[in-house]
Length: 256
Image 1: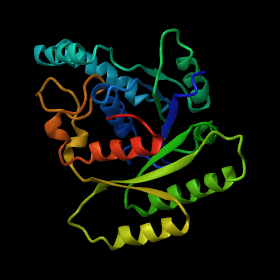
Image 2 (image 1 turned 45 degrees about the vertical axis):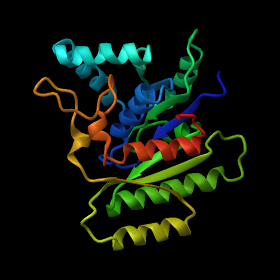
Image 3 (image 1 turned 180 degrees about the horizontal axis):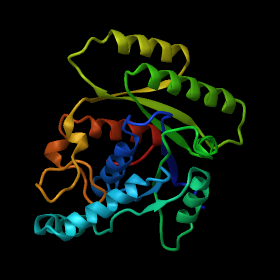
Image 4 (image 1 turned 60 degrees about the horizontal axis):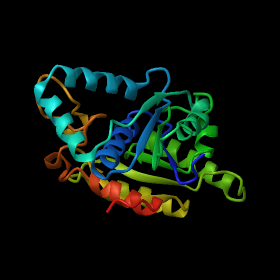
């Protein structure tokens, strides 16, 4: 197993907060823009939404000369293939990552693991404990916050004196923030999280419809894609570049 490969899970105990979207966006940005070698393990059983997205992306590229040219231009620039996406259950996450790292001729800087959006799925807690880091998107919803904070606090308390557990930290970041709304709710949650000694990234992801745009035959506009990075024009104001840079500093990634 390559000790330099970092395992980063995106996890939240509630669905609909953006974990699958950011798994793809961060993987594509690091792999295609920042030239890191990335892999993705889709543990969101049984829907495996990321694997299905890869299938849709390939179909869209196969039917569009415009997208085909983007793929050709990208390969000429970076000289590497699309990052692999493999399916597994949460129970299999660590073993699946180790198998990827043992692939002859392969080296991965990062392996992202998209975990199920519920603790009812078997193996989620074990998978989290066996990651290097966990990245948790949160929204200002009472049920989401109660679940996220109580679970993460319990996990961090559990690992505090256990040096044999790989997990080094859990990092939260705010998603879908409407800058027109009052900051009182966010300030209250920040105070609670500080008291709980939970780590919150400085980057705030704004509420914007661009995060819902996938590759499609109906037009050329997209943001999420497993075969291409987010377009430069769409990146501006999205918060994704800032999130990737802040995360890279924490993980000690060399992305220039």
